Image (cartoon, rainbow, N blue to C red; front, side, top):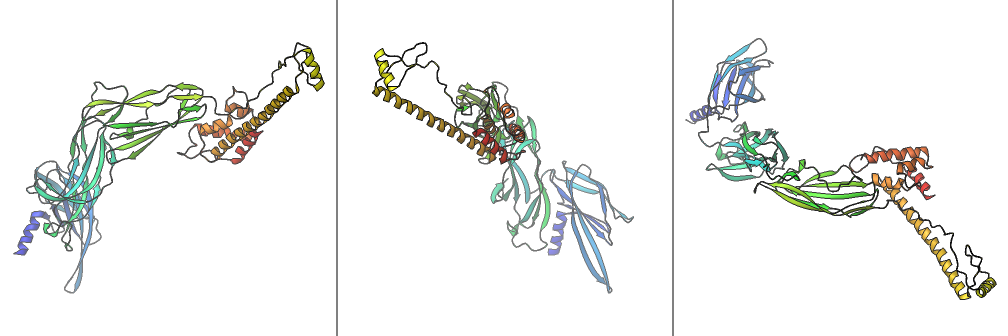
Length: 551
């Protein structure tokens, strides 16, 4: 009795079409529309044949083919050993129509001139399952109606109420119509209720999507190969399953339609950033006073739920004599919904100017209120002045310096002590008292000593600045601004730029050529922390430049 029931169970799960050498099975026997099923060929071989299978799937689509391997069986008949081989091929098929499916012209070519034809396969494709399925996959989006650029999540779950031994992804969803971020998946098994039935489910794939175009978009299916036990009494994890009491089958989720709406065109601000959802902006400017040829830096952080990958950096500072280098943008995840994008701005001022403080307006679209929201970023005042090089200060004595002449009597006393005052245009002398003389002499000595220490301090400051810039450039942390400032310290007329000063200097021709190439490399942005410097650092040239600047 048990054998009869077992045979009936097999017939209910498989439709079998057989010949002497070829057996064709359909699993499950009653497939569901838009759900994949297997067309299994079991072919007996007597030699090393390589069979070729062909058939017409009719209205169905063949989505995959696999070789399940070869089984070998040896028997002894009348003292003779007989060996037979059986190879199994599996075709994955899906039908988008319910009703009768006819697979025609089924033929197996054994490659040795022999062919085996199988009668047409008649399959009844059901519109829906007669009973709850034991295993299926669902793609569950967090929203089905979204705006262009609005983010939403999609999770792919494996639902089962039989013992599952293992699974693997056969085909990932391409999701080509969306900008996407993939999430790390924690495959924790949880118990849920679905359509009145208790299931276990496990998250297999997850992503955050942003629709790029208005209209209808499709969430593509995922395809899994699952190894499971058909007996629900074996437990949810497959414990106690004996060898041979499990099956392997491919499962595929259904497509999900997403309605993508266009953003409103009314009241759209000219400074709309293109972001959808709430966003916060934080601008950081280390200082607002710089000198000419010094690097000006700023950092802008944008945090929110939108597609920050496509966001271009807003214009923070703008001036005809302010050169902007390539702005670096770095994206960082805060959580699965919120990301932060950091823009690092670098400018170089070519002359003195002032940019007044302002409120930079940016706007995003709020999908909940369906309105554009304006945010203001406070941009501080930027002052560029002076030069990046401390120039030497020289004081020439005035030729019309004079000492006022006193009366004749005082002049006689002055002659006695040997001090004569000279006044151009006059032939007069004036004497001073010893006290006044000593006071003036002490003042002059103080001026001479002060001038000496000021000059020494000034030279020391210049040398310190030279050493600082040389060390910065040799360490490969230099920038165009730092090398520009170092070369600008070469003596020359104020109207000359650093390149012209370099050419007119008494440096060696090899050093001139080296610094010219390095300056070009820096200006193209190839000498930075982001990319490898194309011009090697030669300390001998920097040493020659330092000695030249010291002289």
